[in-house]
Length: 391
Ligand SMILES: C[C@H](O)[C@H](O)[C@@H](O)[C@@H](O)C(=O)O
Ligand SMILES: [Mg+2]
Image (cartoon, rainbow, N blue to C red):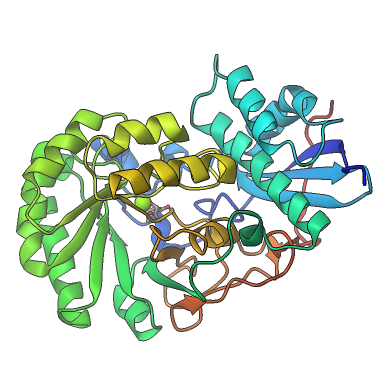
């Protein structure tokens, strides 16, 4: 039986919410005075959108096979990603067998090295790789998790990221990760306010519920060390992405200086097996690649094996069905992240809403990954998309 080949690759864009989940309108906890590397500039402290966290928008990659079957994936990339797909990457896909995942990934990565290596280029390569897996699953009538080794557990368990870990606890999640609100530039008052917020949440959830901080690259080693030691009395479980991703030396020092028992984690803005090799060698306790940003499933399989050899857990940054199909197949990924995209983090809503139909969500903090072919989701036809470039 001849293998279907790739007939056409199409890149479209969406503005507002979707895969660029920071692109919210109106009040949203995810854009409310969260510490960032830009916090050194007072005018950019209140809103991450003010410095452009939502400029990219959503990229949708569709790949049509010779028999008319279409697979797709969504990621953060917008028009830049669409240009890269249509003007550069399409040539390595069209005409090739759908099963050529490794060869295609290698050519996409090598051919963009002179301007890629991570960031929006790897987001785009990830989107292509995920669309290929979705297409292969649809062609074979299999969920993606069945293509990459099959489930090692019956269901996933989740911690929730958002402003209300106390509500996440009531909803059945195993922990709550809060955004850190004040960076070093906000001085001692910011330090005190950070701790007060943690102490307050600890008083609401009791001693055993996991509480974590997401520091979103906003700290330096000295401040992070002091904050970690001060947070220990409130049983902070992990301090996430304290430093900028390139400061591997800082992560190694922070890991050495952190209180015994407190986990140091990072990785959502890292990409490829080479980037994660550097991060793993710092000794961090958990790496958190985003499968929509690190290179897709083809690359995350390699990253996960490297981590496993280091005895390091892989808990992918929340990316809806794309991480669920991966996490359910890996023994060193014992739980997953669910990002609370409800504006006050008080309800469970689909992460990429309203972009996808049939997007599953955890119930009581747990989820059985659907057996539907591919990633099991469809594009919502009511969400307008544009195709800014063709080839
Ligand atoms: C909540 C964090 O500030 C980010 O918005 C989030 O995308 C990411 O860091 C996470 O770990 O969920
Ligand atoms: Mg994070």
